[in-house]
Length: 397
Image 1: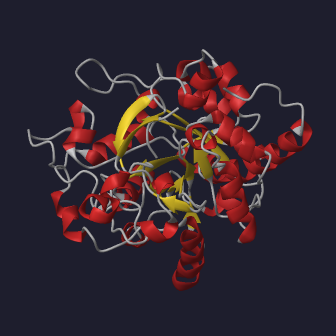
Image 2: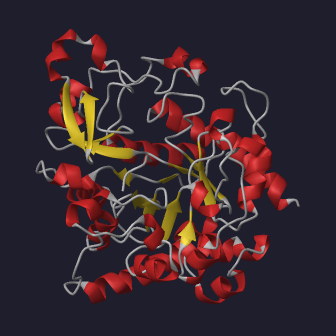
């Protein structure tokens, strides 16, 4: 998951099919976060959810749901099988495996961004030196090496490295240990880990920059839906939740698969890039109004807002009063999985930091408690073990 950003105009074709599918998926997703958990936690809308939501799927997961952000990226280089495995070992209920970007020959691989200079050792490969280039990625000039300029075979010669070594120096111990996973490999890993651990493993893939890639003839939604269908994971009960920062990507997927779908939301003053391309003037602030949330609920089952949309910060970075987003989203029938909780001071609200070292751990348990108290249905975290302990504390309150 990262920070990107019109709704498709005219959804007459297939609208009835999409609405019926959406209602069914919302029942499954909502059963987990508003039914199974709402009554226990006293979350907004708990009674409403108990009466409406039934079915299988996500309802068996604990609430608040702990989602391993890019695996256990607080401890291992992100989007590697080392990171994914550790997230499960630490108790994550779902693993974000992964941020999906395509190769030149149409394979989906797991990288935070298509630019891989910061997450692989590509700069150490002289045979790829000429591939370094500058591209306009969602309107921003970006220099480096891009997955769409490599075949899968070429990418498989690279090794993963820590993305933020200045903050997570410990993680550099594992530089070069793992390669770049493909989504096909993730789906097979999901089966293997489910058998090994004796319980269903859930994943939470994301379509990255789909508008950018569509211009290059790489259809992210088609590639993803084909992979899911091949492995029988395109059903409403399938243990795969799909997310994107581009609402139109989720709308396209709503017509292709039956999986639960989630729209990611960045800062309130930003615009999803598909909105920018389509000339849609709306910002995220428009999407989180009751009207905007109702529209999202017509094709998705949840939202993944930045934590600042749940509890804004003041000019000094301290948490202020919670917004109405949780209640408004629940009223629209949507679940909320905000992002991203991390243990280090540099990522925490000012009033939960400890000391002056930005890489030191702060009062992350206090921050978790504050966010959980808003009624969020789950959270993405780089430190799944911290999240699991924080949930235990919260449920004992």
